[in-house]
Image (cartoon, rainbow over all chains, first blue to last red; front, top):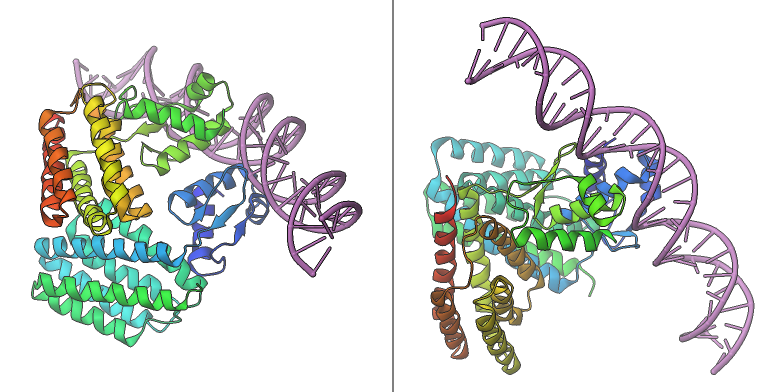
Length: 206
Length: 206
DNA sequence: AAATGTATAAATGTATACATTTTGGAGGAT
DNA sequence: ATCCTCCAAAATGTATACATTTATACATTT
């Protein structure tokens, strides 16, 4: 079991809420779980820290990130900035088969909406919106920010499913994109993200 | 010598252009240089990868990042987005002693402008502009993006000093900020960043 | 009871040794 | 010359052992 696979497994545990914000991760326990020495575990933890899943401090245990409301607020602000920018670029560069992929992602996310897989489908849908922008680095930054949100959403048990309201936002977004209404699409998305921010902040302590 | 210190030393070598984009970093050579085993060196490399200084691939040598022009372009686009956003927030929240710090940073960067320390002074100045926004995560993202640019600027030997034109931009920026002219300040900054982009892209091969 | 100090246990950091993978060049075929 | 194929050398990955630091429980003091 290599560091990458260990990191991927632990990431799945964190974004699914098995490990919650603030929880400790001990090298020895993880090593035992995967039947390896602590060396690859240390590598895995560094990879996870690089992706923003955990905090690492020298000589101290790894901890699942645990953001204060003000920090969560900043993350959602950044998401609004980057995601609306990506969406605008995507609409300008949109081609025929991009819309096909978006429709497919929308359909798929609607199916997953009522299951515990809703967050995966939601991200796949949004990713399909931003992909035509051809901005790999911006997309990766968005993914990191969304993961940060998702860890807290899962950890605080905020949402069991994708709400009907959010699904309607998705449909409205696709309609706006189809007619290349850049401003309208960006506006819907900004509200969508602001809505998500309120939902999480309302569930957080403090 | 701990991983953090090794990483800091190597980072200085990379941003100063001693190690250039695309260059290999071998664990054994680094370990010998710092008289440690390869274990802390591996940790240092992971830290550097997390900060975007190097690329790491399993079983392959670490390499100083080496971006294609299209990727550099994306980085500057992101800088424009985040830095103007931070500047606007900073102006809205500006307090009296923030301006004192900005003036001091401007004076300091003017002194360093003709030395090889110009890049440090430049960043210190821009950081003083963004600090009043109180957005630590956004500031950190900006720092990462600027470091990426700086590695290529140093590696391609683009600029030996801070130009008079850029110094004037800095003075204009401070004037706009002092009068809380948010749009004007954002506009100057956007042009400033676009100018830097052109300068680097013109010097890059391909 | 709360806070402080202390010893012991437990966790992390690093060196060494060895396994695995990549690399770079020698040699031959096209 | 240029492009393969293959192999030895070199580089990276991992386990084990041990050093160093932190954390926990308990005793002591206020």
